[in-house]
Image (tube, rainbow, N blue to C red; front, side, top):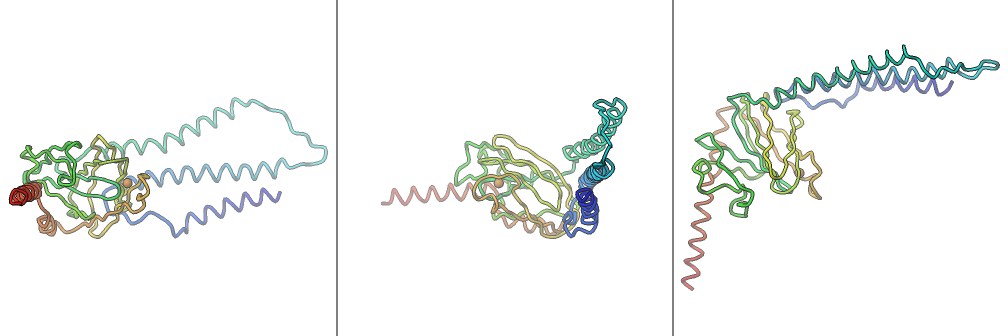
Length: 279
Ligand SMILES: [Cu+2]
């Protein structure tokens, strides 16, 4: 009897806590409100099932408690009950999975006008590459990655010459413009996650993954790595600053293009060789 009351109180407490909880999603700052909707559908369905199961247990404990002279009836099979339970479970699971399929299709169907930005993850930080004036990212090869060429760009690819290389862990994006993020990892699995955008995706060494979103609110948002990637994992943070569209280009122009970086490296090498030959 006492246990039945504890179970009932557990249900009441869980429902009240869920309704007045101070912990909820961070405010949404992208187009992915549908991801919140699918999560809420899952919360509601699992919540209803949780309450129904616990209350049924409380009811069974109370109704079938020990009484002198009363014996339990043995009923191992009930076709009718199994049909009901199977049917209801199927409907509940389908209702949780189906909305996700619709949202996933949107998530991987990138709008034609989306800007492209590459995100490069590395133990334990983020760098970014914009395609430059030609709008095309230059080709890359992991084997070319070294201290002078951290993105592994192909120096012979004309598309790569104007690519803008953004260091420092902060990327700025224009508000209300769809953007496709192309994700690469230098070393191990990482996961690019901005809670306010609801969007996340693994970075997998050896392949390029992607997702898209439209930032809808200006402000500063934190990038987290959501894949345990080594001892510095918790420090693998960055910042997305969503700015007004006309503030974006001035910020981007502060960063060097690949041609400038590679030219500087070539010059430094040439100077180094000169110095050596002078000696
Ligand atoms: Cu990581």
